[in-house]
Amino acid sequence: MNTATHHSFAPDTLQVLAFDIFGTVVDWHGSIVLEMQHLYPQVDGDAFALAWRDGYAPAMARVMSGEVPWTLIDDLHRQILDAILPQFGLAHLDEPERAQLNQVWHRLAAWPDVVAGLARLKAKYILCTLSNGNLNLLTRLSKQAALPWDCILSAENFHAYKPDPRTYGGVARVFGVAPGQVMLVATHHDDLAAARACGLRTAYIERPLECGAKQPKDGQAVAANDLHARDLLTLATLLGC
Image (cartoon, rainbow, N blue to C red; front, side, top):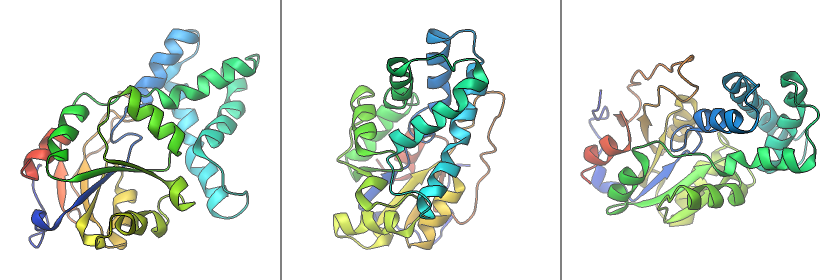
C-alpha cells in the first residue's frame, strides 16, 4: 500500500522531513551481523545484534526516568555491549577491541534506496535527522554513508530521548515552522504515534528486514499515518519529488 490515508493531508504545506535513523535509514542489524562475521566469526551475529539492540530501550528508559543522568547513546551502547559480551564468549575483549566494536554504530550501512531517495526529497524539502543517536554518531554515520542532510538533529540537542515531546516539538522550533509543517519519516509505529500526538505529519516506511530475515517485520498500514511507503523512492513519488 503506497497511498495517502489522510484526506485532509496537503503536501504543499510541508516544509521539513525529519527522519528516524536506526532501522528507517540504516540497516543496524545487517551491518552488525557483517561486522561480527568479519571480527568474531564464531559468534552468532544475528543473536548478538538482537541482544545489543534489546538493551537500547531499557537503557534510555533509565535516563528518561531520571534514574541515571543524561547519557549519550554511544555511552549507552557501550554499557549494553559490556553487559552482553560474556553471553557470547567475548568477555576477554580488551579496551581497544571493545571501543572498536562499539563504533560499529558509526559505520552502519544505509538501505539501498536511501541515498537516491533522499536526493529526490531534498529538491523540495528540508531534510534532517531526528534520532536518539548522539551528534558524533550521526555525523560520522552520515558522512560514511554519504547521506545528504540539510541538518543533523539529535536527542542530544534537546536532552530528551524520543518519544519525549521535546524532540518532536524541537524540530518545528529549530526551523520556525508549525508542527504540521514537519513530517516524521520512520519505520516504527510508536515513534510515529508520539510524533502525531505533537501535531507532526507522519510517513511509515516498510523495512521488513530491520531485525533480520529470521524476524521479518509486519509492515501493515496504520490509517492514522498520512503516508505509507515501501521505501524512500516511493515516498519521494508520493510527495511529488
